[in-house]
Image (tube, rainbow, N blue to C red):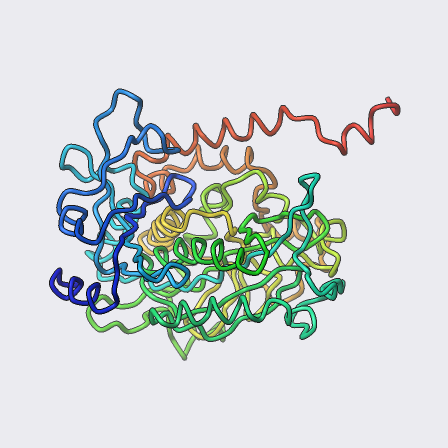
Length: 452
C-alpha cells in the first residue's frame, strides 16, 4: 500500500495543485469533487462530502446523511490534459462506515472473499470506443476530418486510422507515463471506432483504469474536434463497442496462473479449475448479461447471426450464443492463449466494478459446485442456423434488457455478487426499459403510419 508521505513527496515533485476525488454512480459514470492538494489528508481520512441522492443508484434520499468519498492512494493518476491535477479513485462512507452501495467497495468485498479462498482475479479489458462528430441538427456521424474513413471493412486500415493517430499517440503517452503498459492501438471494425490495449492487472486496478480511460478519452478527443463515445451501438449499421475481458485466476501466494495446464486433454492448455470456473460463467451467463450489458442499447450489439442488418462489414464480432471455444471469435468465450479466457460479450457500457464482481462470483460458484462447461465449440457459430444451435442444446444470451433483467431476478448467485446494489440495479434498469419501451421510434412511424 502506498504511504501518505510518499504520495505527498510525489505530488510536490510533480507540481500538483489540485486533486480529483473520483467515485462512480451505479452505471459506472465517473463523478468528482475537486479539492486543493493541501486537502489531501482530509480527503484521505474524512473524505469529500456530497449528497448521495443526487447520484444514480446509491440508495439515498434527500433526507439521508452526507456521503463521503475517501481516496485510495494506490489509484494515483495524473491528468495529462490538466497536468497540475491528479485523480484518486475513492470509496464511499456514511457516518464513518463503509457504504455497501459503493460499486468499488462491493468489488473489494468480492475480491476479499476470493482472496480468502486463495485466489486473485487478474483481468485485462479492451475498451473499444468511437470518435464521433455532432451535426447542427443533433445527429452524429463518425469523426472523419480527412473524409477517408468510409470503408465497409475499415479494421486496421492505415488511411482510416491516420487522422486519429495524433489522438491515439497522445492518449498512449498519457497512459504509459503512468505505467499502464499500452502495447497496441488499432482502428476497429466500424468507421470512427478505435481500441487501446494495455497490460492486465488485478480486477480492482483494471476497473479503476477503465474509469480513468473514459475520463481521458473524453478530454483528449475534444482537443482534436471529436467526441469520444463509449456507447455500445451508436450507429445501427456499424459494429458495436465492447469491453472485452481477458482473465485468469492466480494463486494468492505465488502469483502463479492456476488456469494453466499444458497437459489439458481438450488441447486448450487450461486446468480443471479453469473449466469449472468457465462452467459457472456459462451456467449464469443469462443473468450475468444484465450486469455486463446493462443498457437498452447494449442489446443492439448482442444480436443473433452474422449481423447482416447491423454491420456494414458483415459481422457483429459479438456472439449471442452461450458457448466457449478455442481461439475463435464467434464464441462468447474464446481461449486466447493457454490458461487465458476472453469474454467478448461484455459491453462498453458496463460498470467494470459491478461486472467483474458478478463475473468472479459466478465463476467461483462453478468451482465450488464443480460445474462442467462441456466440450468446446470449434466451428464458425455464425454459419450455423438457429435450428442447429438449438438442437445442439446451446442457449442464447438475452436479446433485450428486459429479458436479461428477468434472468437476473431468478439468479440468487449473481444478485449476491452485487450485495444491496442488486435491488437498486433491478429497479433502475426496469424503469429504463419501461421508459424506452414506451417510446415511438421513427422506424415505427415510417413502417406503420399508413400501412395498417
